[in-house]
Length: 172
Image (cartoon, rainbow, N blue to C red; front, side):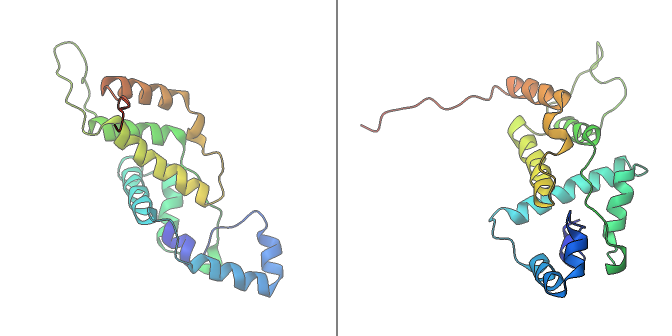
């Protein structure tokens, strides 16, 4: 997805205006190739790539995955708009990060639930990268931002992981 943005560029809200002016087209083409100044950009791209690989492996027939596959082979003739990921895929990704493969029957009486693979804060970091990618590509309110199921699950994991702030102390 980031490669597509760099090489072709996603359609912008004012794309017709940009295309109608050669100078604007040139400026926006240069903007696509600029190096991002955020120190964590490489980590964000890596975490977004993990999510994309998860989607392609576990949800290959969904429209979002078709969008990802189209981004894989960018062509200037087929410029398209950025699509944010569906919130149900993000929720299942968060659960995948927590427990890994979801086997039928886990959590039932007599079946041991495995220890979490990732803690609450790590999962929030992965999801934060996806939200930052949406913001980077002009989606100010990603669909998962107000997903009550996801927020409830994150709160549950935070409580299970006993996440608390450090107690303040004097520097005396």
